[in-house]
Length: 354
Image: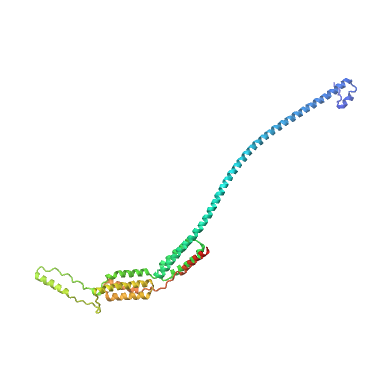
């Protein structure tokens, strides 16, 4: 059996609907409805308060957490900032030390550069002085001794000394020296040392050369032992005859004009012979070919006239004098004046440029 549906009471519509009901019932219904609404409102307010309180707590907790994190980060930032400040102070101290060392290093560098320049100038002066002295020696070797080989060695040593310096400013000076070196290489060679040595050998052999007047015939062969049957008188007569035969000497000299010299004259002959050879050596050093040949010709003539040409030592001396007489020594040699003038001019230019 179905229950008939009752009409829904909404708000102010409940009052007209209950107008037909008794007055007490309507009031109770009205109060109940307002009580329910009040309870619902209170419940809603309570729930909203609780939710708001919960959200506020959550926000406070989150805020506290974030404040704690910010405080930790702030402390860490302060520590980092303190470390940075400390590192900055240390860096500033080190920077100050480095700046002081840099200034000291710069001062030392300036002093070293000044010292290097001074040493370089003095070193260049020393090198140029040594090169000039070497060129002077080379020029003396050419002009006095005529020794091309020694002069060439001196020039090459001077060029090597300049090459070790390695300065571009010395290139012109090295070119002048190189030209003189080429000239000396192309110059004809006179063996002054070899000729002088041969003259010295002849000087040393003069006293041992035999004079023609001192030549003696070969000694007779020794007599064989006397026969056993020879008497004492026979032996005496034989010895007496030998002594008498030695008193007289007959010799074919093959030179009718052989000069006879006293002992004093023999001494002066040898001394004059030595003077001739010494004069020839001086002429050799001076490259005076005319005097050189005249002295050697006179010495050779004295050998063939006064000395025994059959002796081997005399024949060798005559041959040596003939070879030396035919040697050419009067060769005009170049000089190194150009190199010497170049070095001197370079030194003067450096002194004026200071």
